[in-house]
Image (cartoon, rainbow, N blue to C red; front, side, top):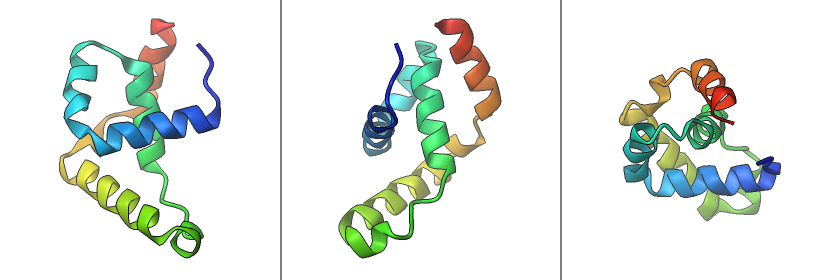
Length: 88
């Protein structure tokens, strides 16, 4: 299934908000969803968001920091994308 950029962003934001789902996704080998999350979290939160939606900016910064503290940033994005390609 092809997702729009907005759908991917919403999916990644949901996973950032509910990081307890990440181990389940890994266990179930749902690589495409993990890839969307890893790609989103690897990018910095847009700084212009700090001006337009301060609360969302802070929330995303907090969630991405938590994601990194838990070590999820160490997942190899290229390997996950490769696995996601085999999945589809």
